[in-house]
Length: 251
Image 1 (cartoon, rainbow, N blue to C red):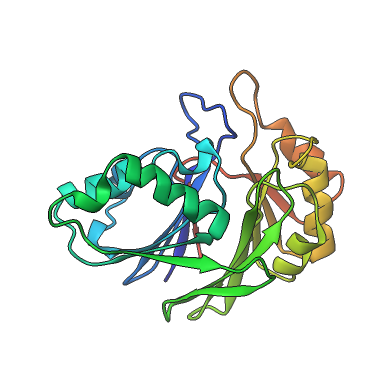
Image 2: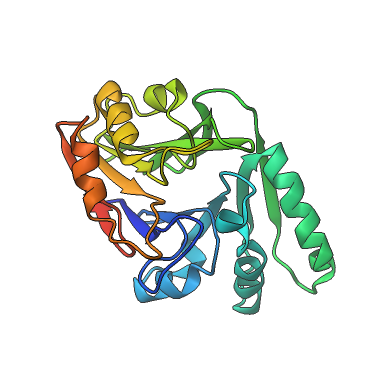
């Protein structure tokens, strides 16, 4: 059975118990990483996930708290002996800048470096990204300060689905992306340009008619995020919880 693992749950400012937001979809044969602000390999090893099982890396947008760890992730896989290709998916805006960063490290001249395949996604709704048999991934553009995508994952064995808003203002693209899913993972950084408050996330969950809402990418540097649950419950009658580091949700 496939599962979602919360590798990090904080907004741009981390705390001792919350790394920057990034996720993993772990199936029987493939693992898909969503963003890489730090180095997810340590947590994947702790979870017992074989590193050779990592098949895909999806980069939602080019902000440091989502992609700053990409060069280290790629280098460590190389140092650990990876030979198989890695698929990297994202918008052209994101991938172009990642390629520029990698070139600064002269990565194309590292001896025996495994192949990287860049899959540039159009800025269209519900674009197919990955079909690994056990799960399928779709992307839609969302409303942030730079081009960004939210994601929908459909699980073949259970007929269940989840959606992840990524960083965004409340928008109809997320409502359509998340329509009827079992779990919506929605950012809750606060009501501001490019972001969403817990109350607004609850409104999106209600409109999308999801079963459960998990808040993520919330501020936790100097405050207790638990009250965010009650705030979201003001607008959404279903289950509301906080996504926390190393939480596992089975599908």
